[in-house]
Picture 1 (cartoon, rainbow, N blue to C red):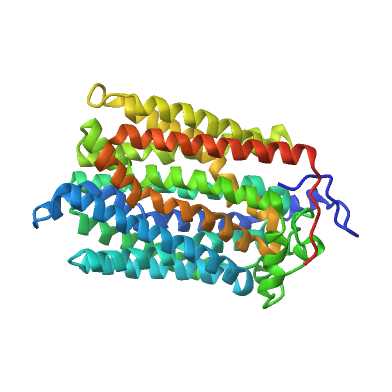
Picture 2 (picture 1 turned 30 degrees about the vertical axis):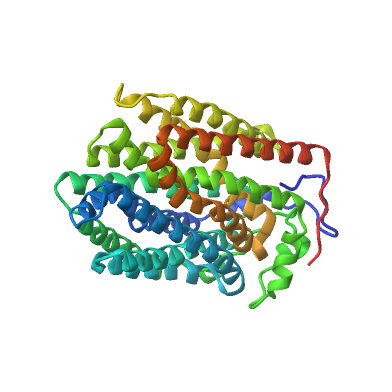
Length: 453
């Protein structure tokens, strides 16, 4: 991240108490609309993971072996992740040029549409098309949220606001998984789970369509201050032009060495997060011996305790100072490495709770540091001008590696077992910890320069 030693020509310190006094009920409403709205995305995102064991079982009744179905569905998950990554690069810049609200609402509408297509599908080609389309539209959601946040909130509240909004993909994910597990426990099939998810996200789409606004000015409120240390200098503080040029948005980010280190961190943390998000219920069924509904419910512990981690990581990093986030990343990834090694050495069917506790601990250690990357760090780098682009690139680069979480992890687990899969993930966590250490040292001893657009 940028340090406080970096100066922006002609720009002095901002009046933070003034920004805090401008926090109104409409700001709280915007946080609620964005947070609950993005949580709803997970009804149409975590649904495939939750129903995966039942879907594999269902396909086995149509002449496809369980191992073949698992590999094919893993490929579908990887194809969706690639589409999600590609969409991040495109949608981030679109949000900065044309507005985040459009992205946020459009992502909801497209996800609902392709969830319904998945329900109506009858084979792998249409399953793949529907899931790829769903993930492509979902890629517009988070960058739209980041863009709207950059326009509504002062830099003095970035950490708090983005920590709260990051709970949407943790507590929100956990809540959606719990709701879907209850549906399954009451005999609802995988198609019914998909339909319920589409309906729930549809209700949230209507609420955001009515009440969400792009800027506080549309509610008669003043525009907040951007972080004066963003890579755009004074241009990152000024109100966005209607159609800022793509080159002017990209160039300062592309020439920032710390920004690319953050992108490398996103590679490792996203691969780990996506692997656990997708495969945890299947691991609990195949290796631990839980039922499908039990596995769905206990998989919610991963994002639930990850959400607690987000809040704690935000407080700890603030107390540690400007390099605090980097130090938390180093510790979190190093501890995750150790935890994954222990998970790989845990025998199956010995205790149902030991693997569950270890998976939950990985979520606690991983997701707090992960939330920094496309959240507060993106706002700090991009200000009002390029925050969505920064978030899109960081997330997009991460999901380029995240595609391994589907197809490759499926092949490893089928061919070599869950033990070797977790050992491979431990290697990823270790490399990520080393990158975080480089970033922490770099930020401690080097003063980055502000690049003028």
